[in-house]
Length: 113
Image (cartoon, rainbow, N blue to C red; front, side):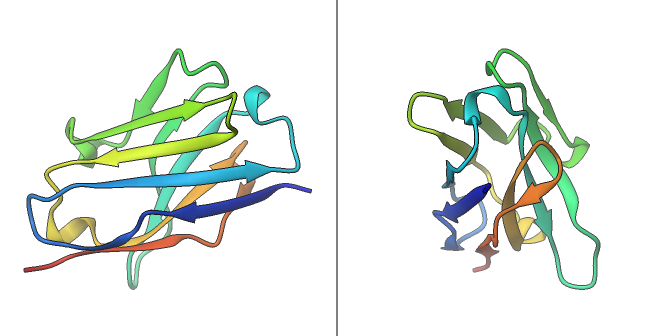
């Protein structure tokens, strides 16, 4: 059974940084495409970034604009999202996703002064 548990969210000032982690279990993590999604109040969930099973290729939403980096540790079954230069409009619940069809519960990110 796919289990995904996110951590690392919190409250940060504009321009600050956060590193999100996603601990994965119950499936062959190293063979799955992994991704991060976010959901903001009143909006549909949207893709933030994705990474291939080996980590050799990544994809980012246009709004990332070079501020975020997705990475993975296949030996430790963990997915990461390093977020820099955060903006108030980045506020939302960030969830990791396995194979585009299993999501974790998410972690809240709030960017506010």
